[in-house]
Amino acid sequence: MNQSLIEAFIAGGETWPTARLTVASSTQPADTTLTDVIAAGRRMGTRMMAAGVRPGDVVGLMLPNWREWQVAAVAAAQAGAVILPIVSIYGAKELGFILRQSRTTWLFTPESWRGVDYMQVVADCGVLPDLRRHITTGDAFTALEAEGDIAPFAARNADDLAVLVYTSGTTADPKGVMHSARTLLSELESVQDMRSGPEEEAILSPWPPGHVAGVIAMFRFLSMGTTLVLMDQWDPAMAAELVERHQITSSSGTPFHLSGMMEAADRDGRDLTSLRQYLVGAAPVPTSLVERCKAMGLAVFHCYGSSEHPTVTSGKADDPLDKQLNTEGQAITGSEMRFVDDDGNDVPPGADGEICTRGPELFLGYFDPKLNDTAFLPDGWYRTGDIGRLDDDGYLLITDRKKDIIIRGGENISSKEVEGVLLGVPAVADVAVVAAPDDRMGEVVRACVVLKPGTALSLDDVRAHFAQQGIAKQKTPERLTIVDELPRNASGKILKHELRNLPLS
Image (cartoon, rainbow, N blue to C red; front, side):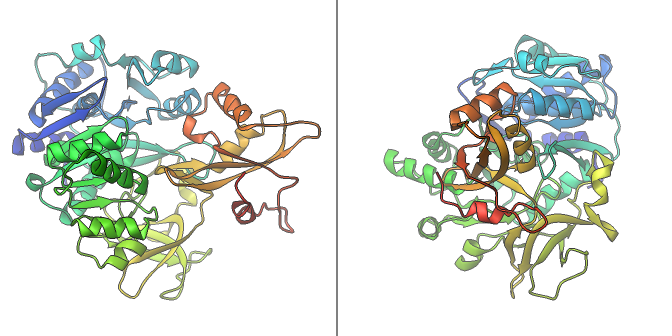
């Protein structure tokens, strides 16, 4: 894996020139080839280099699951720039922090999408001292990728910073996760070892490319020529139709995505028999759904990973049913795990401990180096903050979550950040935020609030406050519980496990 990203993309285009990319979208549909995407991206990258983009500059891609994301990613790699994927639904608060900390120089966004005016969002970010160009999809984007000369690509080392992904974790502000070409291409190679060859595989991806899962799907097409069908908005009936039309063999999502697609297929008479494997992350899957899938030859299994270490473990299509249902699979090629106590000492085999990982896919560290002090043990072991153990057959069991986060639809949301926003509501005297189970998203934000005397608060009031503060919608509480006081231990720490057990309002 001693390649830069642009070298891997060019090699992919030369090896699989006719590999297909399809974008199912009401606004930016596309049906094209890898050759076309690579050439358009390199032309754009050539113009960016001429406009002053230099190796190591950060280029932000706040774009949905569109062809334009891939073209801009190739362009950034051509110029030797760092690719910064940004969640397309982020508001000005998150976006402004990310652009300022990363010192982003160029930013690609839609002009508008799903009712959002991106020019206004960027304007609402305030002063962005390093941002030189904001390119929206449309005439400016088209001009950059138009026919023209292609210059030699900027040389980059395989271990240089290549991709910077921001993830909301346990801190109030997003954390910048640094990856090199080597770490991400190693991830692709390790996962490919467990899957079919690219000439045999067709992937349906609903994951937005602001997340690592979406980036990896994009890079599989660019560097491995894997047939890729993208959705920029989830629609179960469309997903079923796309599986049938494109003979999709592999997809991923939450149990909500899977069950919705299967129900739509039954209703509309769609043939899903080409679909052989479906990855559901670490979300619990109803036994009845897995058994139904197994009956039609579709293997449903889990994986475990994060932005920092994209895939640590994964199930396989031929795993026993109980392993598919109840574990996160086994370590993928090259990944290692340890289980430690609070002091970083190994726990006895079979005992629960914090999961620490190592492997070629592991990130380089956080963009803010202060965060690295507590993130690693000696010898490069990453402390995931999750608690688990291996069973007798080497399959991973996740038993608890040390990090105080809510995982909504696969995205980490910091409870601390949401609590800080809620404390700005005039009626709120005290607050704690926990996860609430949700059939559709897995978990949603639940606010447990103590009110000031003589005040009242509704969920609509909370939504209005978060919108006014420019906070992304997915972080806005979707459940509200009014309590007389928050349960605390003798040292004053809030007992969140008691709040999680309260009946939902």
